[in-house]
Amino acid sequence: MGAPVEFPDGVDIVRRYLREALVERGDDVPVVTRVPNTRPPRFVRIERVGGSRLDRVTDRPRLDIHCWGPDEGAVADLVKVVRALVFAIPGWRGAVAYDVVEVGGPDSAPDPVSGQERSSFAVEVSLRGRALPAP
Image (cartoon, rainbow, N blue to C red; front, side):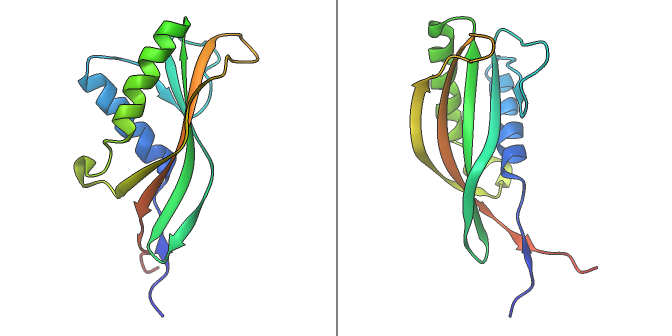
């Protein structure tokens, strides 16, 4: 039997990657895990909504990625860029993310609380685990 395997936080990896990739493109969009109390006009929210361990060293979290904007056009533009960037994560700085599969394409889903325009899509990201450090 091998050593126990721990897995990275998929939401944190994708959030950090997206934030950095958007800033590199000159697009200073907040990428968060919770809807901010004071909502910016545009932001991206990532949450894990399931997924499963595929094998001894692979976790495959399902992530919902929501993009908010001031109008339908701004949301469509943002989701286009965010979606493209998410599929480019394999190999990012030697990241443990090595595969991305879309499980739900972009759909319009205006925020039920604020009425703000929003679109979301869902992916599963394969993440490589590592041996749990000895105590």
